[in-house]
Amino acid sequence: MLASRTSHFVESVIRDMTRLSLKHNAINLAQGFPDFPAPLELKRAAASAIMDDYNQYSITWGAKDLRDEISRKAREYNHIDADPDTQITLTCGSTEAMMATMLALINEGDEAIIFEPFYENYGPDAAVSGAVPRFVPLNDDNSINEDALYSAFNNKTRVLILNTPNNPCGKVFTRGEMKMIADLCADNDVIAVTDEIYEYILYDNKKHISIGSLEDMKDRTITISGFSKTYSVTGWRIGYALAEKELSSAIRKVHDFLTVGAPAPLQHACVTALRFPDSYYKELAAMYDGKRKFLFDALIKSGFKCKEPEGAYYILADLPDGVKMDDMEFAKYMVREVGVAAVPGSSFYKSEAGKHKLRFTFSKKDETLKEAARRLTHLNV
Ligand code: PLP
Image (cartoon, rainbow, N blue to C red; front, side, top):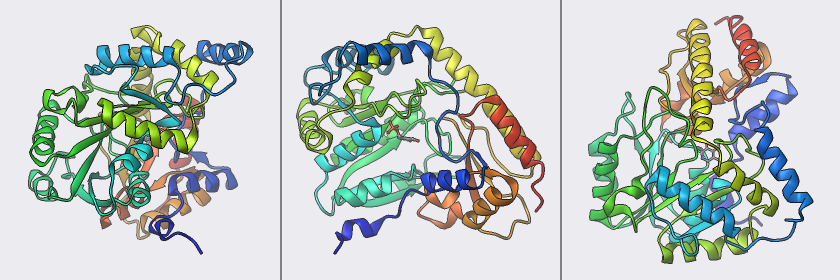
């Protein structure tokens, strides 16, 4: 007999598309991980940490030197004050930070507001923790539908999940939007749980704002981020949650019994990452900007309709005119016949709106993107 909570979600479609892509020898623009090397200095730091014998459990909520560095980074970049001793928890990726947070906050039947389109993990996060998701669709131009947001709040609302920059649509929430969300959270005694994993991948001078830096939100925000995307180390599984003391203590308890701790030598190497100069972050964003433009042009030329994202490293595209297949059929057709893997749009929507979309990542080497573009010219619909 299986627990009913597992019947409320399916295996990740994103990771399923990766498996299909391998089977058909396709270019994998489905899963958001780089196919280029991680920074050499970081790899050396990880190797040294192992050789220096950082090989046993670290403190459950994370190595002290890394929490100290995260506290500094949070103050300087996110404008959030987080005491390293009581307000920072290192986790196995931001994925675990999100799940541990939900398990720490949710009582069965509490509601979680989630903007649509959303990162596919949030559905299972809600299902496992017992939350009822309340999806609030963004407008077609990705602005917030204020009426829909107001009416989503009620006396069962416990958390609002906010992902900025957003995967899949690339929206970067503005300060004005944050203010509106913050007011609603404060009025309704709701906690904001943020996913800021793409906080350094921004284009066209967009600025990353952490809602936890807004005065009213200091004690009612869990700010989640990690090292996967900023430092191209998605396999290291190091993330973290910043939260007010009592909230942190509940998250730490859940985290302890879920995983005991994040990988110790890699936590040590992440200290090196946080000491990279400012130029590292500028170069990272500039590199992805070039890839964004390249993939955008390739998609437009092959008939997709899309906007350039403001942040993160995905393009959410409408299928070319004349395509009769739905997103799932078309994604499978693309892997088999065109040799390019993307994610069916319905993975990011509760509503039907995703059924005519695919999500492509551009977190790949230029040569990978060029080969994908060449294959896309053979798309014949
Ligand atoms: N959050 C978002 C919005 C993502 O797109 C991803 C990965 O694609 C993650 C979290 C996973 O992050 P981590 O590797 O830190 O678990």
